[in-house]
Image (cartoon, rainbow, N blue to C red; front, side, top):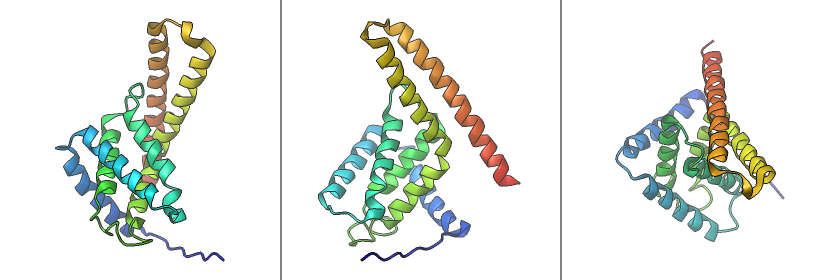
Length: 181
């Protein structure tokens, strides 16, 4: 038997979570990126030890892993503002004593899930561009194989990344403009 409980977060509610994320961003400026990523990975390992997980948590783990990959991919070169946003998200996620302490059974990760969902939605165009980049890179490597000159590969990958960065910036700007109107 399943039970569905749903609730809607208003703009005011979301602003509460955005404020918490901004507080985490202040910490990002002084934190070491590799330490933040290590901390998030430790939390993910800890979460996996507590399986079975609530579905609302387990559904977000692949999204969180995708965000980590996007941040750590040396060929992607995530823009600085987006890097900072992800690092702030990771700091918030790794903090066991955030709005809802993580040790509270079932609901301890609810606030973390809301933060992740908020960032995933705000970075929609960035995530889509990254997915296209990964697909391009995989197809390119499969097509050209190991015989391709590394300089030629790097140049082609760089051009594709630049095009996708331009696309994601253009789409993000259009999205912000449409929200204003």
